[in-house]
Image (cartoon, rainbow, N blue to C red; front, side):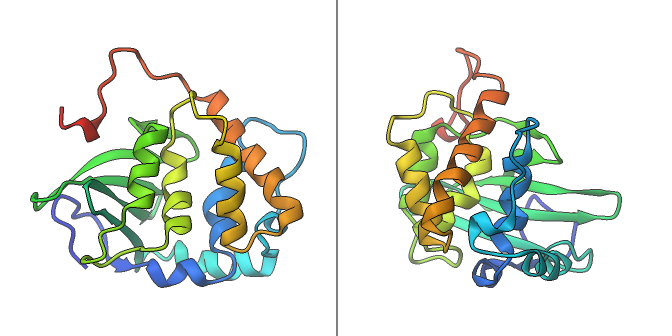
Length: 207
């Protein structure tokens, strides 16, 4: 796979991995753990177990194959998530795609800590809920939402944000009795991030 503007690794389609047990724990547990929460997050919050997580991590973090998750949007910019499996520099890169452009731009990265611009709640919802059916990539709204969630840097989320997150977690297989706990921990990470500068302008605005 080739992505113009990102020429640093052996990229491979990662979309099929979304349906493998252990994926969401690999992707989200670190965020649940951030900030020294008293309760230790476990894969069971996502309906998975430790064996699932260990088995899939060997695939997700393979230096010979960097999983790519494409989320083109119907009505504007989309996002690509890449596992950057570079020896000594593992992390996750988030790239912004624009309709009509043949290249991507770096939006953010996760290397144990978040760095970059990120998305507002409304931007996240727009991309999650408007897949481009004519393009290859992740079409399922719940999966798109969770793939984008680490990009959320907007502290002013609406009152319904928790309910939306719980519904999304349940949709991907999280048990109902733990999805609210997982959602609570995921939303708590927002309080440990800096609020947007008032003068900040989103990449998605075209500026």
